[in-house]
Structure formats: structure tokens, C-alpha cells
Image (tube, rainbow, N blue to C red; front, side):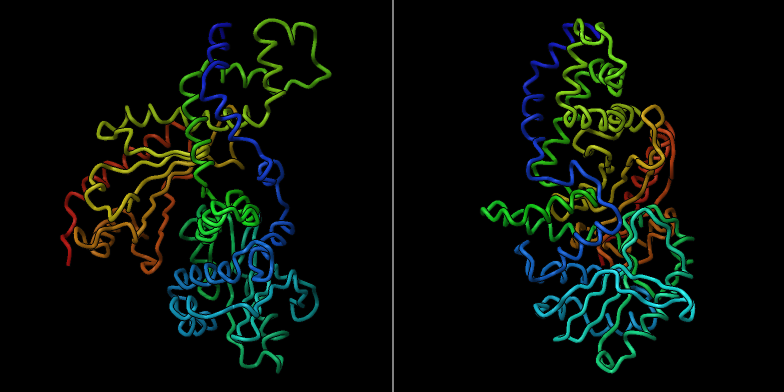
Length: 437
């Protein structure tokens, strides 16, 4: 890195804007990581209609509506629960009497061992009891889930006070999208399986409240951003600025990575001398901003490679965040109801298996049924048509979103090649799609 390159980076107006927008005064989760119990505590706070997030019972409604959408094929209690609690009934009911209990102790293994479910949602007015297992960085097993079902039914729902309550079982797993189809099938149909994306509706609602001066909604927005890929307009702007800076000043960002991480007890006079010493001081003084630039480096570098590998791809068909990049074929623009893409491919960095020198990515196909223009295409017919090339796409047809993992823990080159093949196949299949009913 030459001195002129570093000083051009410092003079870039986008750097100043990024530094100002990246202030974390209102986003506690940007500087701390929640443990599993803490995660459940915050989630319980979000779902409590009497807390100070100003959402009332809307978070519960968002949760139950998302669970209904994911309940296709569910059996036993969940089938009865969601046959009664339809989206219309959920939306028009009040859950103001509901409360959430944390880590209710239950007996498992025929009473020989203690177990804990993370959350119970109880509403004595509507007479519902929802057992919630919240998984964070832990694997699900059908044996564990069956133990919890037996314990809840035997020790809680069978009590006289809950005899006429509607009972449901729901799993929350932040890493659900990384589960293979085989793993999902092994978990059975007794539990509804959700990731955290249902919180995005709550965060969007909270954002409007924040714009009206209601600052109490900030914590919910921050929590949603920490557990999903949802981004507020400010976060989207931060992602765009970081990506632009990385692409414009690649030499500086490469040098930044080399200077970062040197312990203080290894510094020598030369460490802080010259333009490289100035960079070292800049990195330690602005660690949050530099971490943002370093985290986006790998994803940002994929953009020109994707544009080169897929000749039909233009910059208007590319969207990216700090850890992900999404692309859609030009054929989808004629199917869009509004501005959202109805079908696209996402490449995202998998933090738990990545190293700075060896990032790993997953590639998935994303289907959003609500973004199709029904006057231009039959969403169901196109879905069935594409499922011949993308097995599993036809499942969970009533859910708004369907995500299919197509490549797992691959290198950047493998991710590019996989995305290029998927895009070529998508373009061909959409061009031959059935017309509207």
C-alpha cells in the first residue's frame, strides 16, 4: 500500500459517512453476542405484550401467523391448533392477556431426568398454550423433541386448568435454513419449524414507530438485525457504503487486514511509524468501522466475479449486504408485482466454518410467492415447473418464503460456479414457464 492510496481512502467522503452511520449508541447487539439463555430472555421480552417495546401483542401475532404458514403437513396437536387459529383469527384476536414463561422445568425420560423448554406462551383469555424450543448454536434431534412433547402433555396440558387449552409445539432455530431436506424430514411433523425471519415484520413495524419519534422500538429493531439478515434503511446504507469502499480501496483494506490483530505487547517503534503506522493507529481507533470493512471484503469481491461469470447479469440485478449477495435473472423482472424479486439466488458467508484466509459460503434458491404478479404468471404452475430442476421447491406451498440450500460450505470459486449454473437454469425454465391460469 502506497501512502497516496491510504490518504485517498481517508479523504473519501463515503468513509466519513460510514463512520457517522456506524455509531453503535442505539444498537447494543452490535457490540455484544447473546448466549442461548440471554437470547431467550430477549425473545420473551419481545413477545410480552406488556413490555416497553410499544408493539403490544403484534409480535405474538407475527409469530403465530408465521407458524401457521410453516405448519403444512403438521400432525396431532399442531394440526388441530392451526386449523382453528387461522391467519384471519390470529389477526383479529387480542392477545393482551398472554404472558411468556422462561425455561419451565419438566421431567423427561419417564421422570428420571430434568429438562427445560426455553419458552411457554400462555394466554388464559384465548386458552392457548404454545411450547417453544429456542435453539441457538445447537443441533435438534427428534428424540429430544419427542421427550419434550411427552413431558408437556403429561405434566402441563393434562392438568385440569389447561384441559380445554389449544396446544402447539414450535421450534425456533436461527440456523434452520442450513438444514438439509433429509434433516428436516427426520425431525418429523409434530413440531412447527421456524427460523427468526418472522421477526422482520415486527422490526419493520417498529421502524415506522421509530421514525415517528418512538425510541422505545429501537431495542426490538436491534435484536431483529442481530438474529436475521433484515436490515433497516440505515443498515442497508452502511452495507452499501462498506461495499463501495472495499471495491474502491482494495489495497488499503488488504493492508488493514495485515495490520489488524497484532497484540499491544508485540508493538515496536516501527509499528507506529510511517503511513503503515498511521494505518495501524486508524484500525485500533476505529475498530468497528474497520471490522465492517473487513467482514464485507470477501462478499464484495464476489460481485465482479459474478458479473463476469454470468453475462446476462447487470448491476441492477445484484443486491448485497455485509455477509451476503443476492442475484436474480433478467427474466424475473417481467414477473414482479412490485419492487421485490419473486425468485433469486443468495450467496452468504457461513461464519462458523469460515476463516479470514478461507471463507466458506452457502448458496440457496429463495422463492417469495407474494412478489409474483398473478396477472403475468401462475405462481403455483411456475413453482411446480421449476421443482423438476429444484426438488423440494414444491413443498410448503402455503408459506410466503421457500428457501432451498443448493451448495454448502463451498469456496468462493465454487459458490460462483454454483450460482452461475442455477441462474442459467432459472432463466431457461422461466422463459418456458406456463401462462397464468
